[in-house]
Length: 211
Length: 103
Image 1 (cartoon, each protein chain N blue to C red):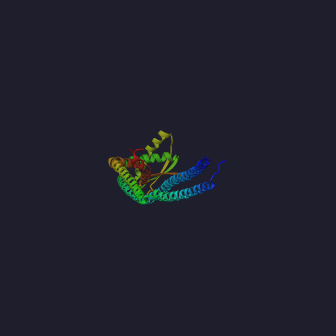
Image 2: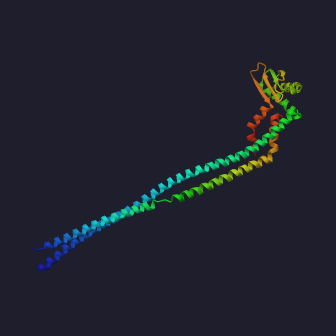
Image 3: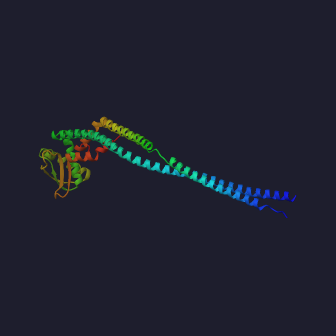
């Protein structure tokens, strides 16, 4: 009976030792498997992060390189279109210039109608009582003829009187008028060439894009 | 009082120690393999196809350029048409403004 008891106790102790060992082994391997999962998960995450980083960098680099190539094409195309636009505008301006030159050279009714208004505008804007009117030789007579009408118009509209001296010192190929104050310190240029340049510069873009 | 055979107990304990030691080694091996696998995963999954990305960006930007060209060409066509349709009126306006007839 005692031997039997001893055997049972011993078996129980050995079983206990084996069970403790089993538990420990289970714990060790379980922990290792857990760590393995963590390591692999972390590797996946790190790889994804790295991939994103690399991809972003490559995309940025590719974009820069390709944009550089394309920007030359863009500029070149834009230049081509601008050139076409410029040609259209130039032909328009040239045609307008030709008509203006024709009108002023032949001294048309339209030119003298306008000249009277240019003269009036210049005198009004200069706002002086004594003025010198500069015109070319050809127009002198016409301006002398229209001066009285301009005088009356300004007097009526602005209640202003003025004395004017006419000088035909404008070159023959220049048309319109320049009005100076008698002390020559102030002036108003209303020549045809300056007006043409002014309207081309100031109003052409507006006219061209008017819808 | 029970008389226990300690020799057998010691053997059992030594055996258990050996098994635990073996489990530690196995655990180390699992971790070593995991690290190796992780290295491969990282290498494999962080790889990118540079050429494909370039191609994708090139196509995307080429499309943008094409849209830009079409837009610009259409704008110019609109401009040309406007000039064509209003040429006389514009010229007349410039002439009249220059001569001062409209003042």
